[in-house]
Image 1 (tube, rainbow, N blue to C red):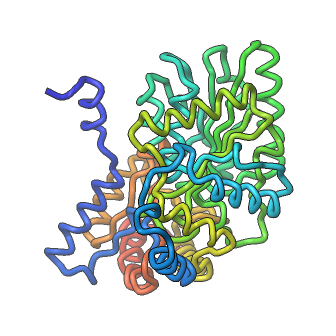
Image 2: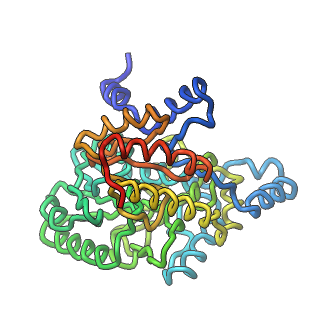
Length: 398
């Protein structure tokens, strides 16, 4: 029999993945071209050409044994150095290679950080709506995830509620900006105020509280909004980054963790996350793609493609009468459903072969998430179905 902890995880399997599998089944019945699957954040634009060229060149020029071999659990020193130098140029930081650990995407980075930090019963705060797997990651290490209730008008963090939820059990806070599922970018003022609250609470409680910034969507920004680099505002900050969305490489599982010198007991913590990288089973980040991304740090996927999709679906849904905040980044739209139980809407949308994810999966009922990193044709062809849904619920066009 499986463990009791796994029984709970199996029973609460990711709704996002379930919807993705539902889409594949539906495609067999009615044809893939008639299914409008907005469930999964799977990039639909190719990686920049330089990524392919670099991978081919490295495979041709590098030692065929070494290019696929082990290295330090933290990653190749020269790759970590290049990542640090790129961050320093872009954000005015002063990182070096011993601040950077290469990871198997942002997910393993989060797991390494949480394994290094959490004792059983420690609490981790995050802001609803939040990425569904955060709870599972925290539970992996016998921590307790607590969600700060959302401000559903702006989806900026509710700082009054946040302050009230910090206790002596609070060990870490996870933020995600640009945010999945809303596409909102947390403002600099919000980040400053959050940092002030955490410093105040550290002093009041005599404890250390770590801020973990999950940043797979940092480069996916459609406006002139600035995504604050959080290490500049709060010393005990760890950054988890992924190239999955920036370079359209989700299946290659490559990212990095930043543990700045300003973090309490930095050397000990960096050693701990590096050992965690090994003992959770990742061992090291993929060897070839460490070297590939090191040469593509200034590249990014076609943001204009996602921007066109965003504008088309947002303009249409608001015209039909749906209520949603316009995303500033990432590639998700989070819109309000006509009824409190959004799962009813999800079921009705399936009748139009439209697949969206219920907001309760992100700890925010009454909304659904739509991922618009799909083909433009999928966006356009889905619109009649969305219009019929709006008419079915009596929504009025603007």
